[in-house]
Length: 350
Image 1: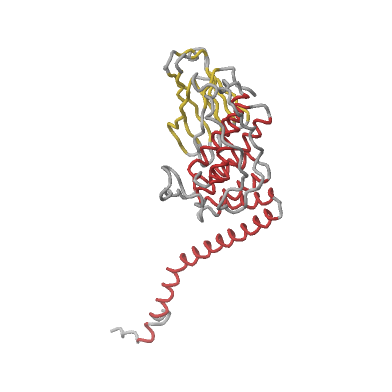
Image 2: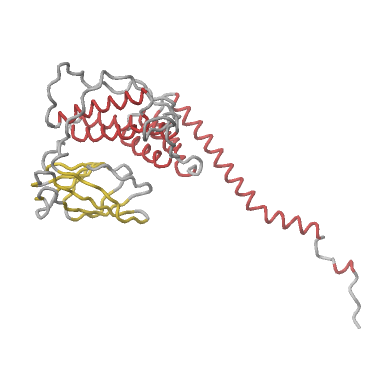
């Protein structure tokens, strides 16, 4: 008959219960510790990257600062996602890279927490010191600079589009007097650009206003500023005249389908009161979108500026009649819908 194993022999090769409990606790806590280590590394990288970018910006090395901030866009996105894009866009603006600045600032606006309504303020207004208004302020400056660039290359039609979009960007934050002055300056420039583009002139004034002022004198900071830095312009002019093409036709842009890395959009063109005999729709993509195919229209692009003209069968529209064209396109991440404009074919300046 077999004898029972003595207690000492039964426990041979096995850890005491208290040690086994410790081992289990260590096994369970290892993923948590690893997560904390990864998070700590990312936070440390964010602080260090901001330090390097801020140091370069303060030393007026704007391109280097933009490079530092751009490096944080992918691996620090979980910590206040908008800040890396805002900082890089601001540095790019200061470096004169206006198109890149506007692209990054559009992404920042898409990711920044939406500010609530301003207590006691006008309908739609937001606190000028909020993160959203800080992004809107610099985006507005970037769009204005793109308008200035377009005006300098004799493209007043495109300049007017940028100036109008700059006002739209800053509109919710104009309870701040300096933001209001920025918006008025951009409005003056838009008026001038539309006149240069051949829009009907306004009725003569007894005391004509001055020409639009120059670009803002101060540079935006690397961190969000509480107040915009522009100088005020002269007295406001009258309401702008109707822009070219606004009575001729209108266009509406809609994303009808999307997938990873691409999307499909449709644009509806509607004739004005006199109908159309050929039309052209144009816009500027903000996120490096690239058209891969297009139907019911002919298209060309100059960088991010795309133009679509009618085909033989859909250019003539009676008053109020609509037609459509569509396209597919590639896109990387954010896909902000552009502002589209419609006008008579052959009237755009390039």
